Amino acid sequence: MSTETVDERAGHRRSLTVLSLTTLSGIAAALVSATLASAATDTIGLYPLAGAIVLQLPLLRLLGVDVEDFGVKDNLYVAFMTFSLWFVTWAILLTTGASL
Image 1 (cartoon, helix red, strand yellow):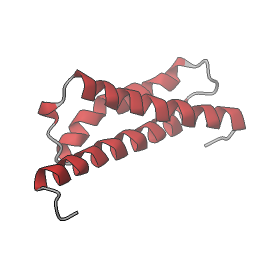
Image 2 (cartoon, helix red, strand yellow):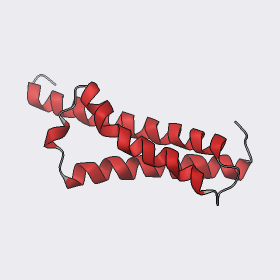
Image 3 (cartoon, helix red, strand yellow):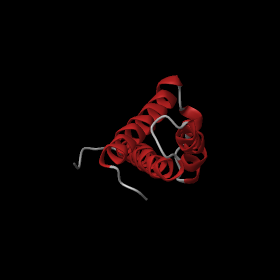
Image 4 (cartoon, one colour):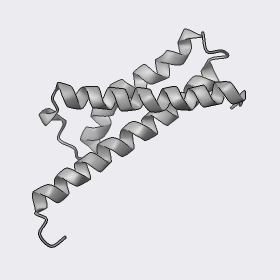
């Protein structure tokens, strides 16, 4: 650990911040979708997902992540991770019949 440079630690911290925010945003969007939509076919359940994806970059800026360096790959990663966690969480909520 003593051989790590400051740049490696900053890159690791950046990765953890992006990963944490995308996963928590996906779960939060699924919880909101579960409260708004009554069934899996309701398209209103997609709006929280879209909102969570759109709000990611401003939130990352507030958390100190330099999003100006984000390329297409980084933006697709944010969108995919948010979608994945939203999909899995909402599917579990729909399958179990949980009401919020």
